[in-house]
Length: 371
Length: 267
Image (cartoon, rainbow over all chains, first blue to last red; front, side, top):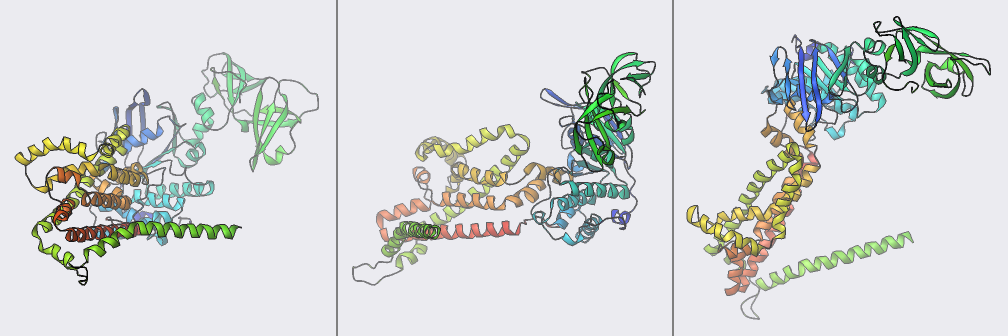
């Protein structure tokens, strides 16, 4: 499982194939009485990696399967490289796919697996062998070429699956939660490798995941989905720091819901004025969504009172950072601070909170006070 | 204590093996003994009953017909069941129970009742299609359904049919390739089990053939038995030995295949 940085990936890819743009236009998919996709519009630029993120059942996997041709759309179209492929069968779509479940053909060696797609494309046996070898080298598994799936670890199997998907030089690479069956360490390693290979090869990629950390780490742009629709699409930093909707704010990272009053483009939360992401928010009472890392703590004298004073009720150690729960009397706040600072505030100690001047999002649904 | 228990278990196993062995082997040994007897009480043992089998053209026809039927039924069964079962797993999971029920039904219907149903059908077939004994393959296809369905179902359950077929399709494989190059090679032992059951059922079938007036192996043995008991027993021994060896070869092949874990498709 070595790093891949030094290998000539472009050569293995076979020269200069220009990347394709993928457009999903008003895609609809209905299963019985459930609407899995409700008019989904996404454009993936050539060579870009877009991650679709959302809770299970939000339609992200359905969207991917529609691009792959493994399911039929009930409306809308899929356009790959300017060509409408909506009604083409999966075998003629020119997409490479890596599945969540281990999908290597058990009766074939790693090399035979990688060569399978080339065989389907009637590539000669010498070239097949050579290209399969190159693809295995690309994912760092040359030494395992003659092994069967059951002789490979989960991470290795997914690498072979990636090599197999790329071997046919598809115009789109589709990744359906390829890392979710792996353990944490292998997962982050393979995540970085997928990104590396994707960058080198320059292939347009759609990556589906329910893991927000994974999506933010790997993607050029992240699309957050909810109930068959795209909630927000943008670069990972924008998704995190400028969520368009309360759903995005709460799905991507943790959020505190604090009651406040909007007044003239700012919001007053417990006596602190915070800027708004959407400055045109109408005035009135509202709930501000505040990230745990935007809250800081200072020790407060015993018995001190006020809107910003509270008691630490729980401390969870997360490594470099710690997450504290502070009871403010009428509500609780999650606070994420460096572990070195957190040691000053053990459970039961009185603290005073401060809010960083990050722009916040306002919501008017639901009750305040539930972090 | 533990060792004593283990020894007792071993003794129990030996007893079971011996009793079962005797139960199966004694009748066969008796058959061999009977088939090799000379004409008189004192005359020496002879293999004439075995050697005379080949010289009776009617008997040879019956044996050939049964072997052909075994092959035709196996091929027909695979051609009918495999695509259907794979298709149901992939596209019509709701149809699985009904199809299973239909496939298992022949098991619950006595052969004699089946024949009552078959008779008019075979009258028609005899007049309009062919009066060959090979038309029995239709009836046998129905008789073997329950056994073969079970065998293939077990094999399919061990394979992630959906993911494998989707992976193959996204790599450019058509439905035929998905089936023969991807799914079947991964259930080769189930396929050979199904064939094995199919052959065993067909070679041992008597009732349907007899009642529809066809002379297959078992019917020939029974007819022969009325005139020449020795020859008929010799034939029965041979057919038993044949089936036994066939099963041995098939199960050995299946195991060797699944151990190597590779089938038709190679890079």
